[in-house]
Image (cartoon, rainbow, N blue to C red; front, top):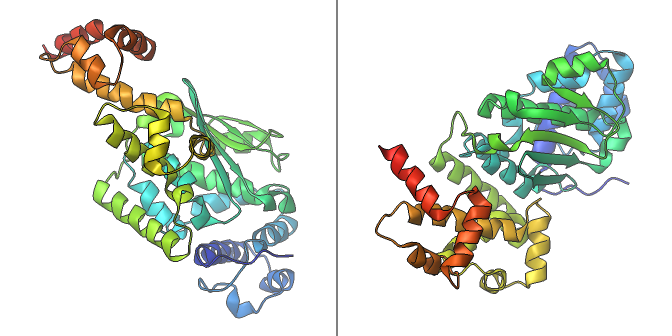
Length: 347
């Protein structure tokens, strides 16, 4: 049974299906076979406003694979698919300040692309992992998921010059092609039969800026996405989560409050719910609190008129020793050493 379409994303789905059908026809797949496979009116095939289900994607992929065996269909399709197909999600990512912001946006507004799309964003000191899963992946042996990963890889490389920072691409399915064809496309190690489809990114690259970074355009696209969610009854903490949590952390930090319980109170949710919510996006609440605290510590240390003890108080520590321990853990330097480094760099 097909799942009812959410009006939030049916145009995105129709545009994606029209692009896939157009590519199939250009490669010589008979339109009559596509129509028969999908069971729809031929006039609907290239109509961007058609009510086509995302469950039709695997059918189109299977038909192309049967008509063009052994060809790199998913990779070639990813090369020619216009980014505009993703609508305002594309704009929000394209104009995002950094890679990290772009990936968090993808996770946050994934429902605009598909109600059933699962994205996770997990980070460690060395690598970040963007996990991608959709229930329909099994219907075409992973072909549509492979296309999605390839398109995402292309967007991140073109907008953020990220090609050298993708350390591995993992797929859950078995390969359709020779391994060399995948590695030529992705330019890195590609593995199969993994737990999920994943792009593995070197953590140092997460702060790379977009080639087209624009805060006004990014904010506009984000506001439009949020308005779409609100108009379709999806506006709640789950669709605004990371940004809303981050904003609340910064507001509390302005008065020296960095506690998780105080943050949950500010957001009017239970601490357990807040931790679970943040965890769904591959983050830890403690980590988010520490990131803001560390950033503020560095900013305050740049002011030579503030003593270490005063800075510790402004950051909500009970004494300067606790602050020194935390700062050493964050930077492998003492606050005084960091302050000296700032002086040296300024000379």
